[in-house]
Amino acid sequence: MTKNALLNRQTYTANNKYDFDENSYKSLFLDLPIGYAFFEIIYDENNKPHDYKFIEVNSIFEEKSGLKSNELIGKNISVFFECIDNKKTEQLMLHAGRAIYKGKQQEFEIYNKYVNKWYKIHLKAPNRKFLVTYLIDITKEKLHTIELENARRRMENIIEATDIGTWELNMQTGERIYNERWASILGYTLEELSPINEDTWIELVHPDDLQQELNKDILLYNKKIDCYDDEYRMRHKDGHWVWIQDRGKVISWTEDGNPLLLSGTHTDITAKRNKQEEVLYLSYRDQLTGFYNRRYFDENLKEIDVEKNLPMSVILADVNGLKLTNDSFGHSVGDDLLKKATDVIRAGCCRDTDKLVRIGGDEFLIILPNTESWKAVEIIKNINSLALKEKVRGIDVSISFGYKTKRRIEESFNDVFKSAEARMYRHKLYESSCIRNKTIEIIMNTLYEKSNREMLHSKRVGEICEKIALKLNFDKEKTIQVKLAGIMHDIGKMGIDENILNKPQRLSYEEYNELKRHPEIGYRMLSTSNDYSEIADYVLKHHERWDGNGYPGGFKGEEISIQARIIAIAEAYDDMIYGMPYKKNMSIDEAAAELKRCSGSQFDPDIVEVFIDLITSP
Image (cartoon, rainbow, N blue to C red; front, side):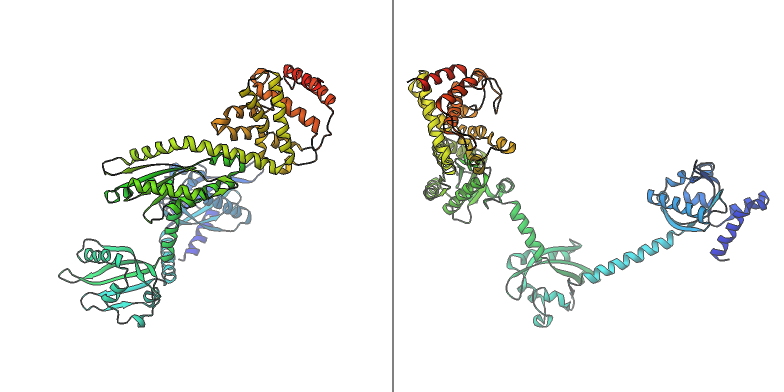
């Protein structure tokens, strides 16, 4: 009987099962050669099928599902769902619905993960009350199909891999067989290389790689290794070197245990190796300067710190004024300063064996193998002389150095490093201070270039601050200091867009908030220099208010330095007298009245009183 006839007969039996006596039905049910289950259809309140209850199963279904009848009878179909994945569960429910509503037998496949079997499921609804399921084991057919598919894919991969060169060698006769790709990898045809023998291969392999490959052959012939997978260079017809991945194996042996037949493949991996070398280069290089990075230093120190490199001098270098340059002119100018500094360091250390490493933001390490101290000093002088010729946006390229020479292998490299670093920091205390002071002068000049109004305003504010200080009986040193603070109070505007500084209209909310950053920017600039550290605090607070409603810190009263309170009055008065881009200037009497109005809220009332007396006295 055919499978379809059997299924039709079983379906007929299901449809008419109550026409049989119980024993006849049980016998037919139990003897089915395929898995069989009978379900009661459970409907929801909308009269739609939403579940199925097991009524009967045969032994084959128990076997195929991995569940016993007492685990199934009376249970919902979800018990069976647990052994198949969710997508197949949805598929089963979908087909069951179709069987019920369309009255047509449904077929699909599922995989039972618990018994590792594939099944074909047949669903049939003899009426709207029951659902019949047939379960047929198709595991063998499925595995055969999968095997055929895998074989097809393997063949596709082999065909796709015809770019690989192949070789075979008979060790007894010396006969060699190569495909055309083996030769074309090297730019030749087989005819051009013929006759190919061992000498041909030896002549083509890079001299630095040859011995290791000959050694690998010996290990293979003596059964020390089962196969090899090596990468080495071979000479191309036009003279450049091609990276080859060579895989080889002995495929048969003589009766006395000697290699008989060998075979293998050659693959051109030049592009891959070049990419690897590029990635390695980038991973070991600082992207801004091109110097080695900290990772390279940490991973290669053991290879550098060896006896053959002694005496080895270590130089630590630190670029002065970088933070101030970044804060004042932006990181792009700071980057230019770094690149210019590394250019002069590179020019001063011209040997291939010298190692130039960026170990921090502005710090560099120079390792000089086989170099005595006197030579390290000479190199430092050479770099300094080159640096004197360089500027970035008017800023001197200044580098502080420290050095130490390691002469004994027992010496710790870390101790040598620390000694050089300590010497470098001693030099930096003086050199960095000088360059910062020069840079601050350049910043002020650059600000004046951006805005002529700012130049005149700053000088007038400084003069007003001086007059107030004298009226308050400041000593000479403090008077000079507050005058300088008045001149530099808006240095932070160097970090503000000049379109905002020179805008003739009232600033927008966003522009005003941007402008309000200038006290903090000025503070960061000036605080880098010991000479300006006190002034930095005055600049930071010169927009604070007596009532605490100022910015950036919301300080009030005497929490604000008297110098900052003086600058606040001097700046406001100058703005009123000489006007703002969007405000008309006032007379002295009008300005005095405005200062008096804001006395005790915006301004220190005592200083306002002193200043009004100063400007209104005949």
